[in-house]
Image (cartoon, rainbow, N blue to C red; front, side, top):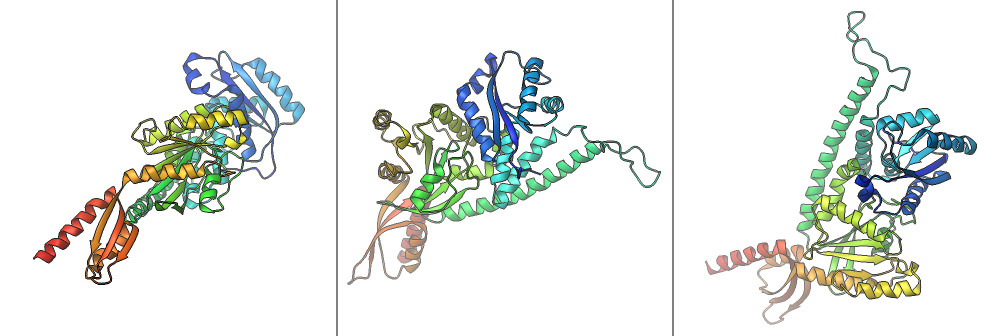
Length: 444
């Protein structure tokens, strides 16, 4: 369903700047130049060869073609001279606009949504990732089936000469797409139920979850590799990784945690993709601490932050709340000049409970980040001191399986074990019930 070019296309990227007031808030929160550079980065992510790029100012977008006739003719000359085979428009095109531009230029045209779908199709590795991408792609294509092939004529229904005119080929294609979408939904639902079982299983394990979130290319995978010693793909490329990865990490004072790396966010992420990857992103909802990794060296770092906060809000997480267990990790300070770097470090100190400046490449600030994570976790996990009799082996086994055992000392004379535990909020009640049941059993 998703086509990935084997040979790099000669392509052209253009970012239309819409001057209408009703779209300025959504489009111009990123600078036009940054948006153009991002679009070029997206094209490079699927190995396209960029021959031409420019920012086009639109005073009055045309319903039929988005661009005016003069600009279309001007771009036609560039397409001919550069022998361009693909045009990428960093804007959401209607099916009609895409079809009309393809007819006028006689080549393939991709809009922002289509380009991101191509990248996701190229990057997805797991069965779940591939299903989610195909689902999003089919939803996107469903409204873009047009009468552009010679075989799109009425098929005869029934048997032999008895049938009537039957359905058109385009209706048949849409029906097949709907059937495939329904099948994928069922498969994704199965995977979602399996994920829920895994989450329930993890809740019985005493390890808290720390999830990395952030704009694509902010350095999440680099940080993940640094902390875990894993070999997750980490490149200076948009959407270098898609599939979520989880590894065990030992914090200096707290103990073991599970670190989760998630798919990167992006501005104007297609709603079909947000819906398709919701099952994956729901891992974030179960996290005890969220690390919002930001590329602090990027010129649009604040706009990128707002995009991430908006996606988190769609998932049901209020990242702006003071009560949230979210830490802003200002990454890539090593790319700043000395003056900007010092200013960044000083600004991070203004909110020591919510921000920390680091470099995932050099390791600067990582110790402070882990200390802050530990402080957040100690608010979530209760420390309990307990003495367990030698005959209460079942209780001791449950404690080892469901809590974090900080220390254990055994009295050689009595055989009692003096324990220091960290217990999650969910497990505190279970522990109290077991202790109460044990006391009742002994007193009876």
